[in-house]
Length: 85
Image (tube, rainbow, N blue to C red; front, side, top):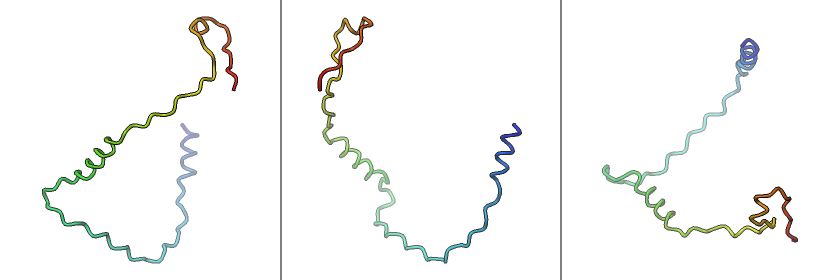
């Protein structure tokens, strides 16, 4: 416990004071479109999710076989044979 405490205490030293950058006025926030108070705040996100889910699923290309394996080879201890490229 003591070595851990010593480790943490060494790294807890206060950092040197860094001069603050010149005060820059923050940019005004973008205008918010006027929406009725009863509008669903998550409606836009739900619509984007519906569109995403409606897209067709792209399946990956079939994998190229590297080993020639038969059922007997899987049960035995014989080494697998590499296929020629």
